[in-house]
Length: 462
Ligand SMILES: *Cc1c(COP(=O)(O)O)cnc(C)c1O
Image (tube, rainbow, N blue to C red; front, top):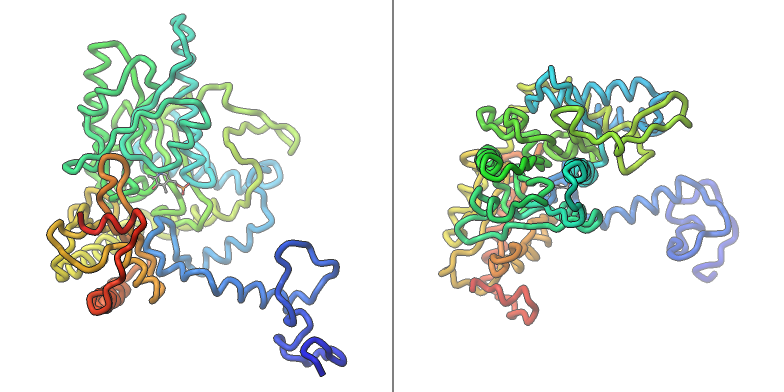
């Protein structure tokens, strides 16, 4: 009997002896007929084996650990559409509680009546924060009878969402390039780029490339001086994607939030250090008047008349509910302990990396001047037969994702490697990583990879 000829299916057949297992799953066309869900579930699930193991993904800033209770709540909410606030008023209530809790965490003044919303992540949140800035700037310019066709935004080395914002909404992005002595923005460089068409300055609390916090207060004070001199009242939006849920617990004395009056809006990713599962972000404005009324839409077709300021519409309510669960479950003390645990595991990793002797750190979490991350490069005189890209590739063999990449403009000849230390990255896990790094380094030294012709190879400790 040939491979594809069989007598009859039996309900007792092994899962992999069923008809559906005889050929590859559809890749281009919808199949004509239905199949047994258990069989297809297994085959689809097997495809997922080829994905990386999320817990070993040390590149992402996002959560890769979820408590069983979070999984239950996500399942409980799978059929609830959070936008439908009439049908699911309690989910809407929980979202409002989260906004209140976050506004309080970021020192919004109660009297000022902070407002905010959940989003799918910091990218959507950044769009909303950016749009509010552009709209406010345009209103003020119109009122003053001035032209409104050349808005610009000033920032340091930002995450790609701000490049998107600038392009999608026609705003000139004045990004301060990195410098070998300074991987973040400073007040002097900000002031050089501001003018009457600046809709706002975006300061990042935990920059993507190294993990450092940019100096919000210093920038705000410089903008105060600028306003006195020139009359331009330029607001600050803080991109606290990571730092927004770290600094309040681990660096409480750092003034980066609504304690600084020039900070008008802040975004953060719930699914990063907010500890919520993927698909959760937040944006909060210090006062209701900071959201231009014509950005808010009123929707009556779900019952009731609901205001909405968002780019997306339908999405599941589970992320919001899980965020609330975490807030109540952990409280301030729990968040502080978890995040401190990440800083400590990060410090442990630094001590281990120092032993190699040829790494130079751009950022370590030792002083908590940024997020729990470690960023390093090869020392200029390292003289090794491999690059960080080779090391990154070698670590992949053991499932670790420790990215190597080049820094942005003006420092793009510097290749770095970075580890994000998140909830669930125990000291033991960091020790396992260090052991694998030692093995990888000795393998690369014994069998040096052939020099690459591509762009990455040219960064061989030049
Ligand atoms: C991750 C990140 C973003 C994008 O956030 P998402 O939640 O992934 O959309 C924006 N800015 C910074 C600084 C980030 O770290």
